[in-house]
Image (tube, rainbow, N blue to C red):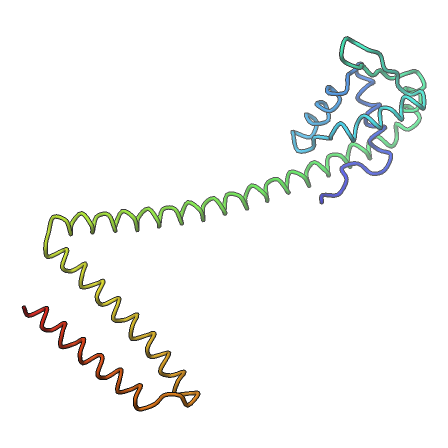
Amino acid sequence: MSPAVFAHGHLRLYLLRLLVERPMHGYEIIQALTDSSGGTYQPSPGTIYPRLGKLEEEGLVTKTADGRKTVYAITDAGRAELEAREPEMAGIESEFTDSVRRLADEVRASVNDAMRTLKADLAAAAREARTEASEAARAARAADDPRAAARAQLHEAEAALSEFRAEMREELRLASADGTLTGDTVRLLVDGLADVRRRLVARLRD
């Protein structure tokens, strides 16, 4: 969570400073704060209205109905409060400026992170698109060229052989390590491979 933009008690003075310019309704006050920060700070109604209510209780602002809106205006007591604490306003303005810069830095960092993530996603999508295009091209070539189809079948056969070899090698090593590898098992493998080899050779030479 980001630190507070205003220190304790400073937002109420800033609200009085805004209302010195002219009476405003709540949304206008929120918009004025948002505009002052270049859009990096947008206080919620839950932040602004309770403070306006407190200022009203203290007699520093008044509120009047204007149709469906409530308009807030600074009172003479509010002006006196603001004048009495005018020396603090320079510090509050500086505090607000520093907070806005910090928020802007956070926004930039967030945007940079989002851009990096977007670039990674786009790169992954591009790789997937290239792979799909390559596979589609191979399929198209195989459909039009018997030799291309044969090469594709060769790749599939070699992949199956590699997978079989890797899996069986691991199983044999595990069986050897725990002492369960027997001569019968090895003979089953040798005889089975010899049978498959004979059948395949016969099919290929037919």
